[in-house]
Length: 333
Ligand SMILES: Cc1cc2nc3c(=O)[nH]c(=O)nc-3n(C[C@H](O)[C@H](O)[C@H](O)COP(=O)(O)OP(=O)(O)OC[C@H]3O[C@@H](n4cnc5c(N)ncnc54)[C@H](O)[C@@H]3O)c2cc1C
Image (tube, rainbow, N blue to C red; front, side):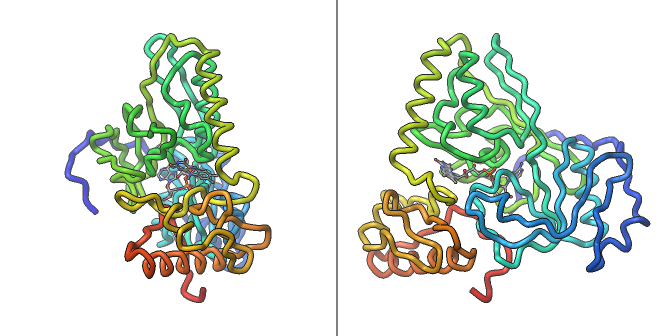
């Protein structure tokens, strides 16, 4: 996919340089952590990813890094390029199904990009990509900044929300975003507006690219009573917990809603509520959720996704497209 706009481009100063010689031996089986030269940032080998995803399944990352500055992110991209390794970007892992075999190459996590700045006068909020969306929603409400109450039940990061155009309760990311800063694998940065991102239902121009969102600015309504906003945020939070199965690991809604239909209703009408493959089950409370009942493998979930697609296609002649991002090798499943 190519983007048709030409946003401003800035080349980052090369503040972090890699000691490439020290890396040569580190791609062997006995790999040791690699320190990005001049920083305390470590690239670690063979890191389990299951606990870093909301499904709680999946194998290890060949290499994993969680930088806390743009210069470290850039050095991480450089390191992967020098070693000819693919890069996968990881937010809170709340919309990912990662293969039991894990992921080859370098996984770059944004979880340490957490700085946030609230301007109570203008209502603008600038946050690091790794900031959890629910935390942002609570903090904005407590400061009398209206707009993000819908986000409280979405367990992703700000970066993931920008890529996915996350939304709930009639609100979505695109409605409040002013701009997003992104870092490209070649080290250039761009500032993208919602128009640049070509937002539609749960999608953006960033999907399928390896452009890393580093921070974002939202425009909220200032000067609103914090108690009123906190009450509304609490109501959304409680509504989610009573209507959706939050008690077991999942990725939220597995499938996008096809035009004019609700995926959950189609799955329920196909008689699939409670249907189970291995440790993966279609939730009784909400048929568009697949739950990890405790011992699921990623391959169980993958097979269940395909079973649902087949059943719905047979009954309704409709193809359900997964909203969850499926990563890694599932050939053997
Ligand atoms: C219980 C539950 C309820 C949910 N409810 C909702 C809901 O109501 N509405 C909704 O929209 N979603 C919902 N979700 C899904 C999920 O939380 C959202 O899609 C969320 O935006 C994903 O953010 P993340 O940080 O977890 O991204 P990840 O799952 O880590 O990644 C998702 C995609 O974004 C990319 N990505 C992540 N961070 C960055 C970054 N900084 N820069 C570039 N690319 C990046 C990844 O490479 C991947 O392609 C729910 C999930 C769960 C588990």
